[in-house]
Length: 547
Image 1: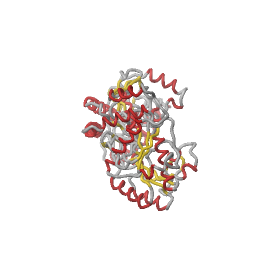
Image 2: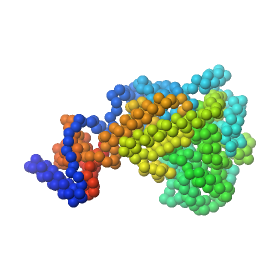
Image 3: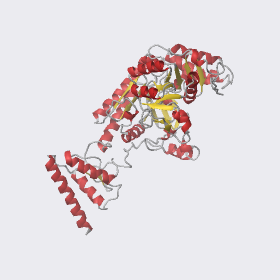
Image 4: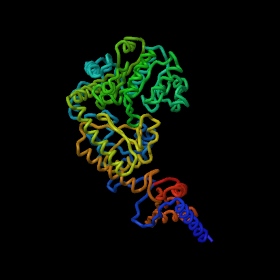
């Protein structure tokens, strides 16, 4: 009979586990009951006060109007699950969504809001400029002023060309590298993002000397064939590419601190080696400072590390929250750009007075004494608090910061390149992100994005964030982290929760068709040795996933 079959299977399972446990010298599993905790789609439950009804409605409408409902892919929350929240307004360190939820914001419009959102000093300057017009399409005195501020701040910069975005700036600098050196190939690094130009949307081949392959449909083989991909923090991989492509490499472009694979810090010796290698090979060294420029120091990553590249790109902070980009460098190279030289690049809204005004005012604020010390102190308190909370709850976490830029990974670390970052537990990060969001903390919706501090963040903001992090870390640990350690847990529809042997027996009945798959789940095992492997293997098959 069916009942007899279930009983026989349960007895065989229990006997096998106990026998293996005896042979392995493991402890006996326990059986207990406790109050049920909701398990919904493997995601931690959220506080009942957090509602996103209006955001959800707007996103449903947006998906009928725009691809994926967004204007930039990461905003869609694909890597963390759930719907994005739709912002209504921002001010200082805070953001509010259309449902009225308030957040401490560590995205900061992806970096530009370094002095805080909608800073009154920046707004007042913009209002004054707005009275004169929004765009001239002609030379503007404000361009001179912001260009001079960039030249004064960044050691390697002698001339500047303004654009409208970081992507535009990187497109321009790539063309300039090739025009100046009369060579076509460029070396970039796995995990470094330089905008969505065809030549940069490239993944590494099977070896460091292999030509790249397009990483997005629509990118032609011809566009990607001249892009070579090296490993970050690995000078030998760069040297090998130069050796395999003698006299063909125009230059090397990299993020001076990686922010698009999470937060990854370069070894100074690596940067020094790149400088020497590029000089030796007659190639240009380019720092993409779209994210790090005026963020980790007033002179950017190059000032922080004491390395002088030939060219640099900027964006984000130098526009004070308005669309902007720039590429800059030595006068001899920059004079290749039209109309001074033959390399063409143009833009209708480039150097528009509003972006220049916001940039000027933002840099004036940042140039005040003690600014970056404040950012460093705030960010250090935040990231150290998060890491300590994670470790205290039993999670493998690693991370760090430089000034107002930070990040952490759900892995032991150290993380030195994209391959290391890819070892992070992204499922756990997704649950942590959702838990923090529901508690009023807005973080980048991807494990592979850096976070940003502003001068507007208060001690109360940071302390609240750390307190919420402790709650979420503990919640994830209680429920059983992906790949973590704990006891087998079975959850029935009537509210019963069993662990240890009780959970294991319950899952046997599921195997025989007694319980539907959404009623029972195993998080981990309590035994060690062979028993652990046996029980965990069965549990994984039962659940098809982990709580």
